[in-house]
Image (cartoon, helix red, strand yellow):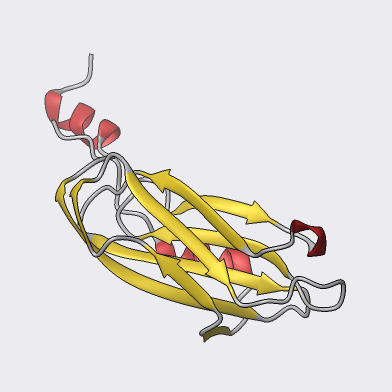
Length: 136
């Protein structure tokens, strides 16, 4: 049997490394600000069910479309919350879902265009009742 301190170290989720995960997803490419609109309430009472939407300015034609949308958070146990893969037949570059937020934190959405460029938006969200964290 493990001593209590060793058990606590094994079960506690370390803070994630969001910047490194974003670098891996983008291959280290430059990420531009703009074109992406992240829609998350700036203040939520409960982090267990937070509405989240992402829209990207794109005509979604065969020659100009969004191919990927990724959403990241800095304090959730896994920084890459969700990924969507689109194509010109999607019609619109927009997603909507509900997510869990571990605590008050930044939420980042990035989108890859078919030309290989990356675009982003960031929003700071205050969470009064946290989710996703394991306390001992």
